[in-house]
Length: 135
Image 1 (spheres, rainbow, N blue to C red):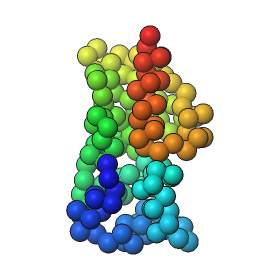
Image 2: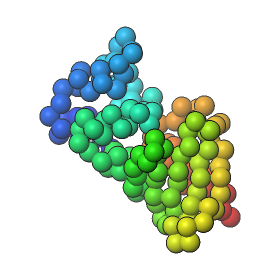
Image 3: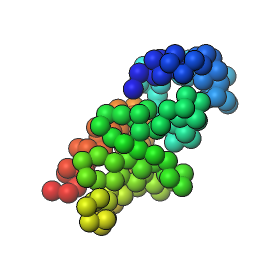
Image 4: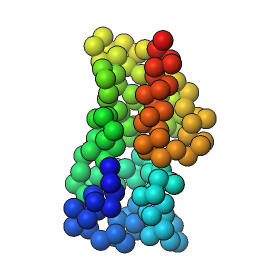
């Protein structure tokens, strides 16, 4: 999703959004620019804050063919018949088959998270990792 367009369409000022997303950062404006340039990812809490501020569902913010929501503080993404539950405190991703409701895999995502991927990179990685894990 184009965050500049999202902020503009929501009628919010860039500085207001930056301050809300990065309240403890001395330069929130620059931090938000890094997110827009895909140099810095947003945390779960920041995605929730952005969703509330812009009144945009998380699934639209994440896009790239995924639908998603925050459930009990965890990000849940749905794509191609699978639900991906990100259990970030434990650096795990649970892959659930939507058709059967069964857990297909539990994937350690700690190494990937340490690389600080952008949202787009992380979503692409989820698709690739799932294909490898389930084959």
